[in-house]
Length: 438
Image 1 (cartoon, rainbow, N blue to C red):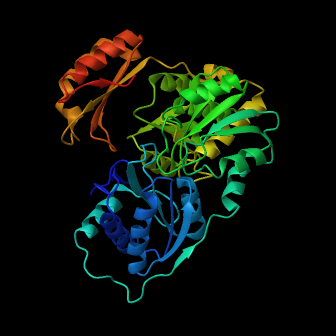
Image 2: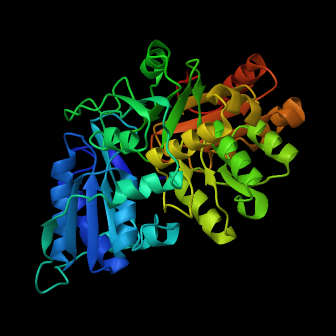
Image 3: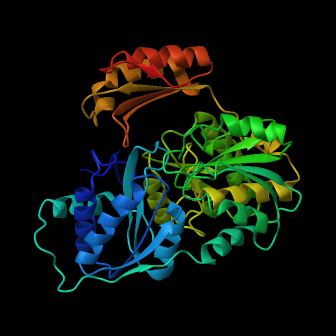
């Protein structure tokens, strides 16, 4: 099994089996060389099974393992950073329960670069007997209060008193934490979808399906809604009018706030190729430089660290504040966003409208039977022709998904109709049945 955009992922017990998890634990232990690992996972039915195999693999190589239990991805990264340990998360993030995945963090809590993943893949093919004479100890060490205190530090001593927020925990890894975090922030909080049963993670809820949250925010007369995904490393917000605020808007709001306060180091923000053209135009108008990376929050983090920048993220809702965390964190981002609202005295809808104007964007997902990593090169002529028609207020992006057997065709244009027709035309050149997602 090979690494994708965010670890490895597949159908649990069919594509991603306990034997694969066992071997991955052994290979990761050998390549990363850390004497200590912290392991956590989300609420899927298959997570305890895969975690047990993974922990066995780590222990068999002499690694001491601290099992955190049900824990968000950023909580595992936090503990890895705190302890100088490698981190492992069993989660398929936003996928439904029948899928699962394994994410690895280097000692210190950062995601692995491509070359290290390649070395782990090679080690998988060369496994022999265990390298350790004695197995490493395995300890159950649920996260203490340190992670919650770390989240609340984002408020810098301020509170969210008077802010009414509805939080959708996606029946996922943060289900047991969200009420405590937001209550301790001072907010008036309503928590929904926080009763995981092994099969309801991301099902009709969370960051990938915020429709129920939109309705609830207006019904509750709340100031904001926060939708996490299954492992709580990202968020999608909902304003007081029930409109969705995606990662682009959240990053834009935070970038402008940090720019005004002199906290946006080098006046630069890091985003991916999927970020809306309207974001780029808004940042350019304000004098903020935009650095662009491939899709994947690990590439955003690499650029942030390389340039010494202080803010980056993805349209999907992964937002990284590298001075505070080594990975995206939905709850941390939510607190930062609510803090901007509180300090500015503006409603979220006003902040979003003032931050950027989103250009119409259409995404068409084309199922494929075989990986197409070079699909953009294959369609270079078609892409260039489309971009010539769209001009400076349009953009085309064609890429293979790193987590699913899909080719994604994204088009931005001055009108939705033009974006739709252009995306459909390019998608017709990609093998498979076309399914428009929006």
